[in-house]
Amino acid sequence: MDRRDFIVNAASVSALSAVASMAHTASAGMQGASSSTAKGADDGLGSNTITIGVIGCGGRGSGAAVNAIEASPDTRIIALADLFPDRLASARTGLAQQGDRLAVPESSCFWGFDAYQKVLATGCDVVILATPPAFRPGHLEAAIAAGKNVFMEKPVAVDPAGIRKVLAACRAAKERGLSVVAGTQRRHEACYQQAMDRIHAGVIGRPIAARCFWNMGGLWSVAPQSGRSDVENQLRNWLYYTWLSGDHIVEQHVHNIDVVNWAFLAHPIRCVAVGGRQSRTDPLYGNIFDHFGVDFEYPGNRFALSMARQWEGTPGRVSEFIYGSEGTASLNSGACSIDSKDPWSFSGKQVNPYVQEHMDLIAAIQSGHPVNEGEQVAFSTLSAIMARMAAYSGQVVTWEEALASPLDLMPSPLEFGPLPVSAVAIPGRG
Image (cartoon, rainbow, N blue to C red; front, side, top):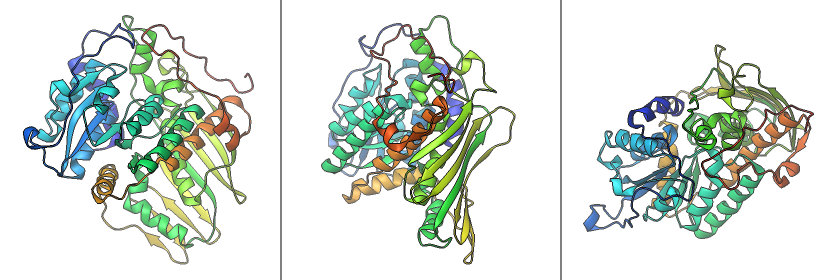
């Protein structure tokens, strides 16, 4: 099940079970009753069953739920949470049609700003965190405090304040022996893993430069409705607001930046960037850019060129290239190759990496040997945030400046009501 296709389809799926628009605030009550789920004879769950709660039931959350079931016969989805009741209803219906292990009783389905707390109270073993990225730091913090193993989608934050919270939560997870796996699926793909093994073994010599791309056409969008508040309209169209998605360099291009960090075994130390809004100028597309170009500097006098754009009607390119002192690696899903004195091309079979990442999490839980990918995905997310900060400001931004920045994009308090859209960033104007 392709991750991006699932997200595109979800925009239309939500209409199937649409309900009246919510007009209550975050403090309003929730639908659905809390229940404590323990594995035993009474509930029909075997002692080896790994129970999963899903927080965020859009396309990616629903897709991850299916992937988790495909990953093992021992998994079962027992709880669902979403901010919106229509999205929750659509997801519940769609998942139940795909098998008994994805069928969730209404009593274990929750909606509202605090629905995630209800899922954490069900006694599930694992939570899938798949809400818009702005909510990831708070949800991760709560999940670790509740003693849950976590699968969390990328990116893991939209601002430095969120990154610091994620890093603290992942340190707490290590202390508690909990596993944290991230949705950077290339790290779980055999093609990429074998290529990286060769890069790190020196087959292309010392990696000294890289290029990475996520160039594509358009994505889904949800038009605003007059009966909805500003906050609800923005949440339903979350891709296009920096406070919710981090902009597409963070929400999407983080995958490719993560690959470069992986190849260099380091994060960038500074960057300079350009970007703007040339193709998507309609207010429907919020306040994010539609293109970025970044020059990252890495330790050891190394650099990487990054390019990301979302322009309708233009050719796509999603790939990474690593240049070493003795060769080159070309990286793409299912088609990695190396040009050097010891040339290589991937030719084997591999498990769907969207499934493999859940297989790896389940294996860690069942073996009692926790894995924790929190820091690496947080560093890759901060690399993308640093690049966005450089593009928005027109300034050189260092790693230390980005990590220490007080920038916190989450509105406070967050509740349904007015929320003016922040102006599109213009470099050099503050």
